Image 1 (cartoon, rainbow, N blue to C red):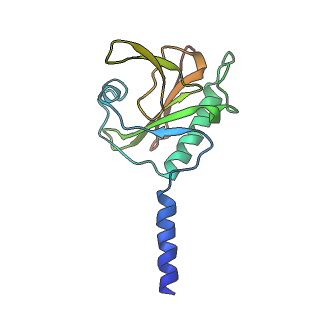
Image 2: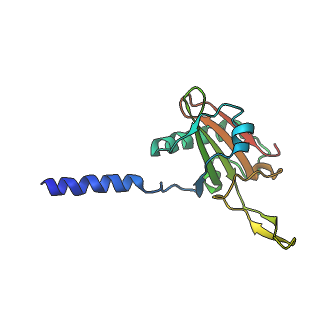
Image 3: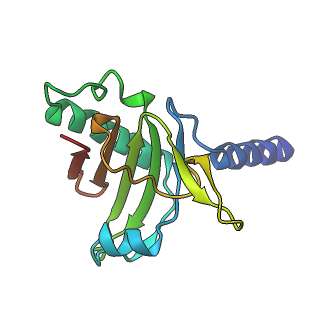
Length: 161
């Protein structure tokens, strides 16, 4: 009996340590100094590890935000397409000890020029896991949302709209 309970507890622990299986591609990033300075505006205390519940709350808020804020000239972004966007999550605790999450969403990854040691340039594909993708425009193919998981408040920003 004790051995069965032991294996069951181990199974529960291991199953909760696995990455979440979501309907979209995502990466969780650590905030860099520019993000903290310009996006958090001094409202950053520390990072945190998102739980399954945090993802569920964020997904509900995103659906609500896109439904409420959707504009008629939006080409890509709608409640039926939000799971097609790749996401970058940056979770952090603000100065009020509330869980916040910045979610950057992109419909496609672009190639960008990188200078080699030789002085030549090559094009490399953006990677969700490397750094925050900050497009210059791109319309509603690129959007971001700041969510306060404690208060359920959000700010949605769609590029070019």
